Length: 147
Image 1 (cartoon, rainbow, N blue to C red):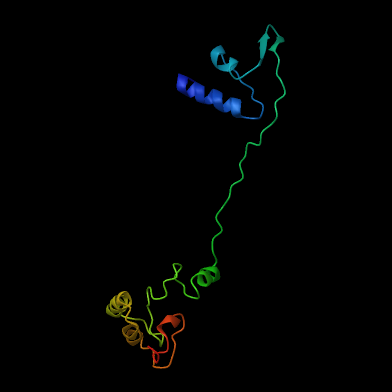
Image 2: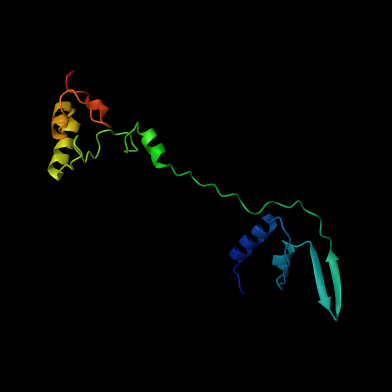
């Protein structure tokens, strides 16, 4: 196969960096002389060795792969302070009211607006949290008595 000069240079550098043994058959002396210090010639049923191969220290070729540990659902909850929002935003995506009923899109938008304003009373009203009660997962809304 034909390799251009740039590809031959890259292959030569990689083979010189490689820590293992290589058996190479090539007619390109310029290429193999930069990689091999020992040549074997096979002619007329005879093998003739030219040069000397010095023993080199072997390098570990394979690199150990590292993987990021995926967080379990409980670790995500713990990191968010008991709320499933990984960024710790206690009010984000409030999709259910105090009674477990799903909020309408309009209520979710109104909740987001109230949250942006910091209007805890409006957020408690939208989520239908009774006075004196604390909504699980949204403890920051308080009990509604102390403002």
